[in-house]
Length: 471
Image: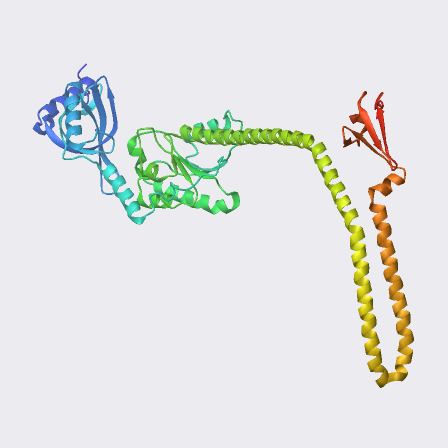
């Protein structure tokens, strides 16, 4: 039906008919049949050898003011792709600003699109890529580009500040994966809500970072996680902001980002301490960090156990060696003690005689000196000397008595220390094969015993050994 009752109202067209008028109008406009167009690539993909993308244009504030679907059919895509790669060294990718030659095409089912037939490699990098490069270069000049990247994350990271949209599917996936982790550890997370796409992204994330730092003195965060789910590449424009990049680069807490799919990268990916592809990849990294920390702890415990076991084994062997050495050491000590006793016994008489001789000489010298001194002083203090003479005689007698007593004591000590005196008191020494026996367990039936007494030796044979009491 083309129209209904032209005389009773406005002409009404079917959608397909209206679309045909649009296509006819476009065919009459020469510029739409072939023109060079500059635009930025977004949402690039390929299927069946064909290339599909969205072309966008932004104003000076970064706001998208034009958008159109574009297609490079397989018969031209191979040529255009290789030409662009050969002359620029880069693949066609999102964020590049390029110049394409093509024609407008309108299809009643698929709408308006731009069919590309040629590319001008002189336009290589788009505004997004240029902006990212300029931001990174600025951070490099300021010497802060690797500041957060070089921070050390406390292991395992369990206290996590999360910056994300509360309603984002990526945030939900992140929390669910942490809560259902196979390690069984409990992560302590706190959400700091922020806008994760659009013009307000940078300021919103900056405000959240400020709030996290204010709470850090209380909670002591192990790391800050900035996450968002996937989406169009243009939705990530808000993260390419110099002020936000400078804040993340100098942030005092390690920053972990997961703000896009694997093919999407922004400035924060280049400067954060840890970069993961997606929110679930961040969760997997946190869980793996805990698992590795536990594994390291287990390995250390195993090493300590092994070391302790080896040390105990070595000490046991050392004790066994000492046990075998004790009898020999005891015999050696006894032998040394006997030798010392014999030496002392031999030296005591001589030492006593020397001491007596020295004492006598000293007494004689003292007596002579006193005699001479007394004669000298008699003439001066004769009255006093008479009294002193008696005192000296008494003192001399006392001194002689003390020296005699000391000498007698030395003689008695000599007799006491003499092994022969010990034997005279009724003790004896029993030997087997010339060695003294100190333990009855060492004697075995049939052994020849030599018992030494004060008056001689007695030889005997062991018939039996005493039985041990069973406890």
